[in-house]
Amino acid sequence: MTDNEKKKYIEEVFKYCKTDSILVMNKTGQLERLQCPFEVMVIQDVGELYRGLICLVSAVKIDLTLIDVYIIKDKAYYFFNFRVLQRKIKNPRY
Image (cartoon, rainbow, N blue to C red):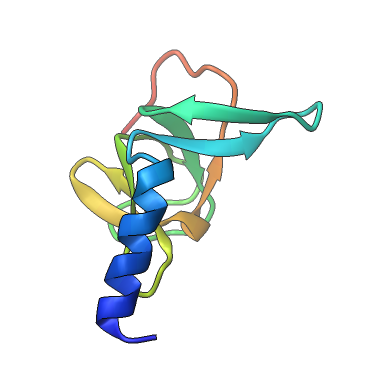
């Protein structure tokens, strides 16, 4: 896929999906939309984030390799470095 084809694909995806939420399966198997900001836990050290840290995702994007990216404190991180938390955390540390 060329870069232009990827850009067109991303534009098409964002006709239906927005950067302010993700879709997840809840514990009962129902599809649920999580609005930003939502909580994630770092599952492997990445950049300045360390394993076990709770963070807030302010936006969700797609890079040119078509991989989801979470925006945390104005920096982009690949989604696979995190586990989405569907419970409320009173005081996220980052």
